Length: 344
Image (cartoon, rainbow, N blue to C red; front, side, top):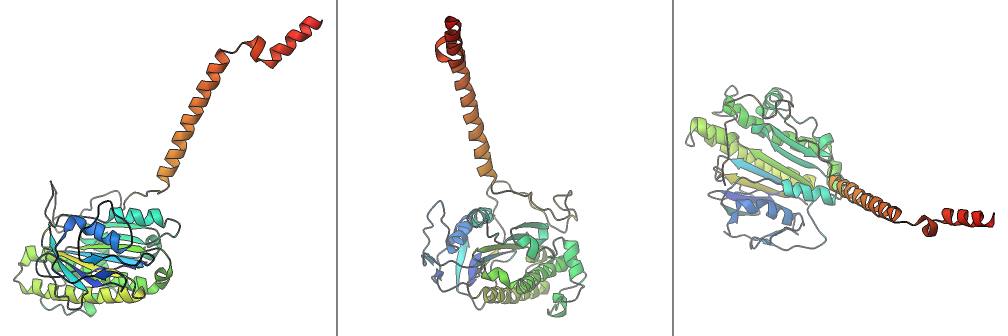
């Protein structure tokens, strides 16, 4: 399953583009903190959180209904997008960096046997994390910037359908933005080819981070025609992306868009432009994949630990009793031997 949310208002915002009827978002100007976004996503998927989210924008829904998917798109470099058709939009305050790792862990701990799809992707940083069925469904998804740019020259490229206007096919920053648009298009195309994902009983989770607008803002400025054209293109693409995913999951998905001008670093956060270096963060792997984690690790660890402790205690008890045993009284072997000696 997939849950899909999209967000957009003036200033940093969270916009819910699509949501099923049983996920009730109330329209209002209630601000939501950036650090609470993972808890909000977890609640919309029907999961519990450690701390209660005292936020009136989301009302409690039916106990036995949950969305089939959640798609969260984070757009950096713009505080709002013109998304005409949305469920609700809320101001975003305290926009600190966040991730959905806790939600992904919950999904896999509860639905490990169903192997749900978990996809976390940041094209600008060439960061990809896939679990479950995502490894098979999105194995052909372009990951590195070199792969995505090569994809732009192939059949089905978005360059043939997008009104580029002032954007250039040769500029690095422009290509980064167009590459992210291509990734959104390819995700939708792959989901259409694997429609069976929408029919299983496990919810799917998507987290996408787009920073192409941030690079265009740095290079050309926010008043440039390139930035304005890119903003209009992305708003249109996200609107269609939300509608397509929502329809693929039988109107049972939540699509969210978080627009943030710039993230506030809570402590120390190093950042760099993707255009400054062509090397990826993990040179040992061309895809910068995370290590494979077995969710049975904690169970196996506890079994081995307590079994070793039990065996160690058993050896100590047996050794203590053997040391203090009286062979004449406590051992049946010596007892029978003594009787036989006396009879002879």
